Length: 370
View (cartoon, one colour):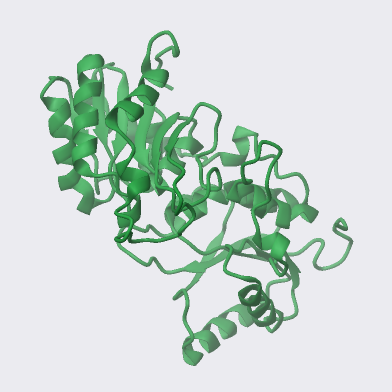
């Protein structure tokens, strides 16, 4: 692809980045946000994104504020066909008049991408970068090991004209946590009194991703017996507090140490600061999983097969993903009734415990507070 040339789009003062989604979608795009910031360091960079679709889906601003990657936000209702709302969005953008638009689109289809491009061209004729207007740009390529590339890799490939995305560099995933956020984490973790910390999130937005609270309770009971010196931190949205407490009942039966329930009590970035103190993070395929991965905490993640392997796996070499390939893999279902979530129900507590041991066993790690 051609490199940037001189001109208003080469040295813009206003760059619009388009990315929809919630917590996980925003975190997966971190290397792309970093790349745009390196390519246009002197521009005002604003994000066009959607309003949250559920209470469990935080605003993109909840992740990107304080990072220096984004200077402001425009929002609209995802999927809207309301002419008045679209007109209001167009008028908002044309008044701001972006000189460059970087499209970090999901795989919603070529026709949708072309409609996006047509809409954005009406916003002052900006330069468009990364619009996934071909099948290849919409598709996750097969890597040399036979697995599909990560979503983060696809996004970086589509905006490759901006330079090297440095996907394997931990700095590309840096959230730039503030001193206040780090201090907040230290404050709420004070009851741990130096114990090694295990963080857990049992929640998920989708029924098809839910391993089941009975499984989490059984798993935590087994882990507590093996690691009685650990403290436990429960994380997630406020409405996940009760399910988290139920799961922690298994832990409390064998471990008298601190159990800290932070569900709904911390911002996503404060949660990330807590995760940075944990030896491991146990979770579903979820936004909090990507938060933990971004701060370098190894995850043990229980994955449904609704997505094809690796596309949404957490970043990092130390993560352990439990994934069963079944004949209906790649279904993309949010609710699974017919197959009764067999990709998840076939995952046993023993399997997940084995992956937990691979991270927590003293022979495999040195425990320290980061």
